[in-house]
Length: 161
Image 1 (cartoon, rainbow, N blue to C red):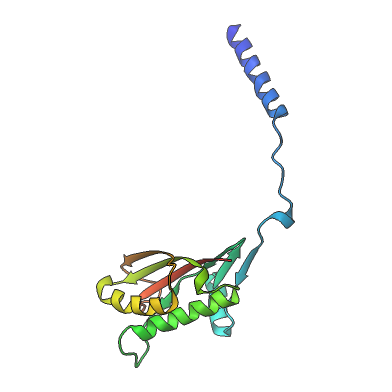
Image 2 (cartoon, helix red, strand yellow):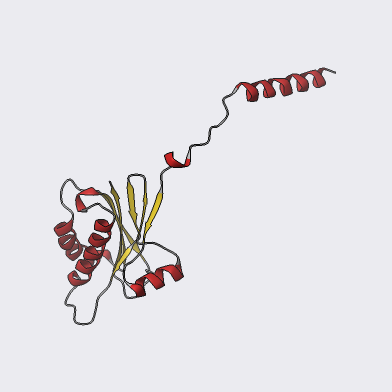
C-alpha cells in the first residue's frame, strides 16, 4: 500500500511540474539563423562538389565556415610557396563572396601531409602575407594523407561577420 501511494504521489507531482512549467516555445522561422551556402562559380568545380556533397562555405548567423582548401604542387612550381599562394588566393575569393575578408578570420586549421617541418617555414611566409595581427587561433596538425594524394596541406578557415 505504501508503494502504491508513493508511486501515485510521484505521478501527481510529475504531472503538476509538467503542467506548471512553461512549454518550450518554438522559435519563429524568421528569428532562426538562416543557413546559406556558397558553391563554386566554376562549372567543373560545382559539378564535383555537388557530386561529393559539400559547399565552399556555410554561413550561419555571424559565422562563415569554409571547407578545407588543398594546396598541392603543379607542374613547373619551384618550392611549395606557389601551391600555398594559390590556396590562399582561393580562400580569399571565397571570403570575399561571403562578404568578409582576412581581417575577419578567427580560426585557421591546417592539416599537413608528411613531415611538417619542411613545410612550415614556406607556409608561414605565405600565410603571413594574407593573415596579419591580431592573429586568429591556429591549429596545425600532421596527417598521414589528404583527400587529394598530391596535396601538401589542407587549409580550413572560420571567419566572423
